[in-house]
Length: 257
Image (tube, rainbow, N blue to C red; front, side):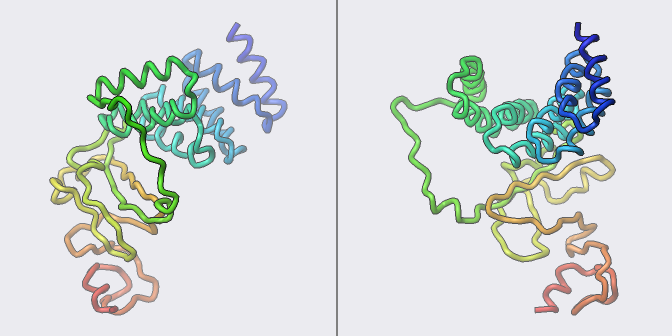
């Protein structure tokens, strides 16, 4: 039956590439285990419909099935950017965080999912199990205070962490061990409590994740030394720079003040 459905849906999509039939087609391929084909269809769908949360949710589920945790994380993060109350994205991110060992964050995503779908008994059961596994306990009679509306206007500290291709956190470069940042300037060094530098990760594929609230990140780079130099081109140069390539980092920033 699924094979017949896939053939019919494939024909429909071929006749009308802009059709939303890519959603059930990619899902049918995913359920059948044809993940490469499902990925192709889903990716083409997100290109045609870049503002459709459901398309990125489908892409995230396919990525997760393929074991591509970090790419699944990116896709589900995109879903929440488009639809902050998407239950499936919160559930998916909770699963990925739990698998990566970030249990506290996993619990937050799952709690939000339960708030959005309180009638989902299976979801509540899962939340109870995760709380039990993580050691989180609810205090009887406790009600969380209402959020202060003015807090939403305040900038909160930023954090960074490093993960591998599967989305697993690379110790000691975790969010919890990152020294919080709350600055409005360039050339600010990101530090971790235990990791003096990134030399232990030399030659390994890694991805950086930045967590910001009411803030923006303009750019980042990995410097070869403590100067903070980027090795990048500077167009016409600037005060304190010996040439058109940044080789001095913070020393030039100080000279320009």
